[in-house]
Image (cartoon, rainbow, N blue to C red):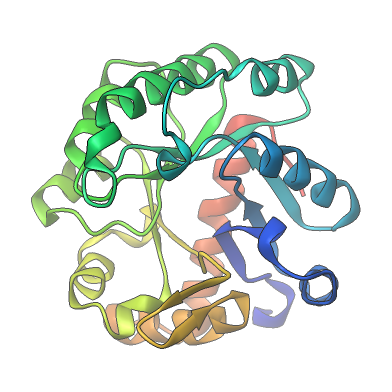
Length: 248
């Protein structure tokens, strides 16, 4: 039964992989939410999803890509077309790019408004800005959101899950104590797995091949079997897709 359930990668930058590596990923049976970082990568992600089975495309503009005024109209036109049901990677960043926070906030609110109007899901990046992001979402009608690689306060995490949002965790928890605490604290019914690949973190190359190790790590922390973890994560992700009208 466990082998019939796919590994879920709820946050991966597929457009950054080489053609060879991308082909292998597409053949390995993963179910992946492929996020984007800017307008060009958004269109690349859409094309990858057309060719690669098991991929749900997400379009958007990463906070790190915001350096000045941003025109989101090219992406708005895609949303109007109805072929994309997820926005990401979007959000706020007060840790690495605090100098552009005000324009980040403006762009994020634009995307949240689009998500509200078109009933889209969103994949959120928010280092040191988790509270601000949650505040914006609470004022919106957005019901489906994944807080990617959450490292915020544990008490705020409770507020996130109480709002019905999901939390993405990855294998960086092996070396990042705060993220391991998040895995321990988040209810299984609000947890999804991710790789954030291809990203290098403290000597690790984060990619989908580490998802089995992540499932094992979660199982050990939660006192569950690996099969149960894999099944619950797949159930959670299936609910996310159904809620926004997406499929794989």
